[in-house]
Image (cartoon, rainbow, N blue to C red):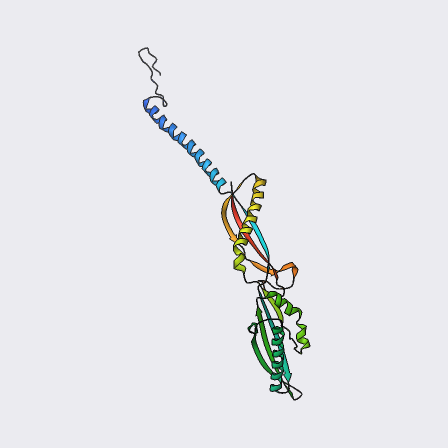
Length: 251
């Protein structure tokens, strides 16, 4: 039974009232505001970090036409006879003819040097044959004179010198280190142009270089001429090429 007599008063205690509860609410509100502000700053920081990390990776190309600065001509020839002395005499005759040929073209005597010789003996139906093979090498930085020698090489045949397989002129470009810096700069400039076009299409701007990788330099015969890589071929006209990979920041 409830006691509703006039002399009795009912008192109720509120959980959210009173000085103690107000002291509890204030720190809670501060913490809540801090969490909201911290979350905003964290999100904004992440956005700014994401924008700062935006980048584009592009490749830049640089090419340059060059002319070889070293000509190397290896001349292989031989002489065969029934005795070694006669075979050797034939090779010596051819050597004098080759030396005279290059001397008439204006090459100094030391431009032509012997680079190898060997003797072979064979027997066919009881007949012994001696073959003496000789190799001479011309090295010259006079490219025009070397080209002239190649054009006139059949004069050696008219003088009785039979050139064996493997004889031929090779032109080499040796000054790659001289052109590396400007070519790398040109390739980087080409890469930036590509990055700027990408940035324009995406509504951004190109910033500083984030990272860069220099590719290998290649030297090939120009205009589809025959020849091998790394600047050695039977044509003096070369094309040097390098590709760089550059990572640019976007802002």
